[in-house]
Length: 277
Image: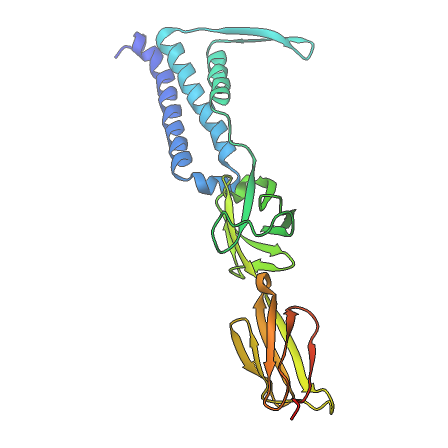
């Protein structure tokens, strides 16, 4: 073929455009099928820029070679005159349109953690009290729980999107339902289940007159029953949301004792008086 033919003159530009387009398609495939990994590595923005450059180059060279498309731009830059012509302007236009029509993914995102009880996501057992902590790499983020049971974390690095991180809840009477819980960082919403803490209720039963311990005293607390040990001591556990209960103590030969008690406090001292003969 005569090298002076029209095809010979445009063969090299078309080859450059084809190679650029193929590389662009390869980058696009990586963006589509490895998006999660790229986000974690923080590389998605870099590849997006490379994709725009390659597609812009392919479009500019192909249009200029086939249709002799030509564009010119001139403007003032740093007190001088900037003039661009030919494929350079077409390539620049494709890149700018790519950023304008499809914005590059943001570098950070926000996460809202909703804390709820065993009854479901609508059970807002912690309102305006307690904190939630997220352990994001070497960074521990802590936020207060709001009126809707929510804790909002702002500006989490994009590399943590879709990853599971440890979480902790600090509240006076509630704790995580799963002690080693982790949450999936999702910009939509994250739901975290908590349960009432188990609070101890302990004490000692003794003779009011002799101060001697009374073993074998029968104790009834809510739906729990127990006996005092050889030293007159007893211990129960109650959930924090039912910490106040009625306690009844009976021992043969002694007057029954009953009263309201609250778990989580100091140990009780319960003197029993002998029953009249």
